Image 1: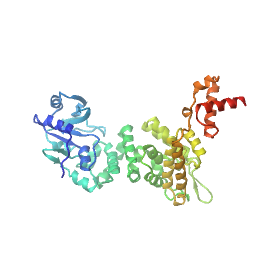
Image 2: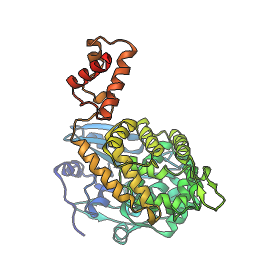
Image 3: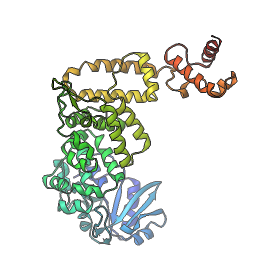
Image 4: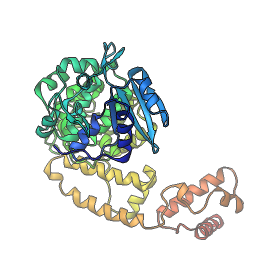
Amino acid sequence: MNEIEITSDIKIVFDTLNNVGYECFMVGGCVRDFLLNKIPHDVDFTTNATPDEMKECFKEFNVIETGIKHGTLTVLINHTPYEITTYRIDGEYLDNRRPESVKFVKDIKDDLARRDFTINAIAYNPSVGFVDCFNGIQDLKDGIIRCVNEPIKRLNEDALRILRALRFSAVLGYKIEPATEKACFELSQLLKNISVERIVVELFKTIIQPNGHKIIFDYIDIWGVVIPELLKMKGFEQHNPHHVHDVLKHTCVALEGATKDLIVCLTVLFHDIGKPESFTMDEKGNGHFYGHALKSVDITRDIFDRLKVDNNTKHQVLTLIKYHDLDLQPTEKYIRRLCYKLGDLEMVKKLILVQRADNYGQAPIHSERIDKFNEIDKIIEKLEHENLSFSLKDLSVDGNDMIEIGLEGKEIGASLKHLLEAVLNDEVKNDKNSLIDYLNKNKQE
């Protein structure tokens, strides 16, 4: 096993503790990422020094007591934060999330035994090398997500680990080993005890992964505990020649084909969630979903409100769901007006990505739409290089200019909207002189 390259900052942490007789190891996700040849976002440490002993060791540094109750301090070294936690074993978990108490211990093996998955229970320091009591290195090689020791106990302690297992599977493309997977399903109801903020983080991180679509589909009964509206899509046949999958399968195939942009992925995940409540069948046995886009908007809004999704994300996703089945026209004038309707060109680009993904999940008879999307992409590329107005804020004139030519009150807003319409219709160029001349000419007429 190769050694981990130690930076000067990491060496400072090791030396500061080792030089006065304390043990110290890098631990958790950073070791896992190093072994996967990835650059870790954070480097965490564990030590047999108590919090008070750590504070004494790092008295020359800026130390923040981020979680001192649980033995964690954050030390700033060259403006970079490093979390250092005393070896510990956890007390009883009463809320399926955090231990009521911790006990500091002196053996690194006891500390590793409390961790969630074997691939996160590997420690390292340059003098000892790797400490791997639970075969996490082998599980990394084999591509397996496995709980440390008993899965029921590990997941019962902290139910969020259920979604973390799913997220790691999506990120790494690893399989969840059978006993751990079985425990995830059996204990999934405990997710109701987890804060919605934590659930949203795991959902968002999962769906943007290349394997996110598979994790949503394979574990829909788990996701359905926190978003029960998703379960209505499961097995709901569409009885429509435009589709070859039920609503859930279509959604997940579309998610597979989606650009891994969070807004796009969220839109694709929820774009058809209103179909089960919008279904009708004609006399020929064909299924129809009239008004399902607006129904999907309503359902998604309720979900996002319940999950406390931020307003900007909510606005973008709801807008894209509303227009996801719009019959787009590959003309410059149409796309410019669509920019005005959606707010800006970036939203139009996201809508195209959503429709491409939706098309990917539909029957092969719709493959000709790809040519239309390609034409629209060329139009968008052209518009990006031109000084075109898609909203009032993009006009080369503003309210002050309207006042200077003698307008007041409601005339100002009405005139600006009139100018924007003229620009969108190619009746006038978007420069100040042309716009003022156009307005004056129309006033005279």
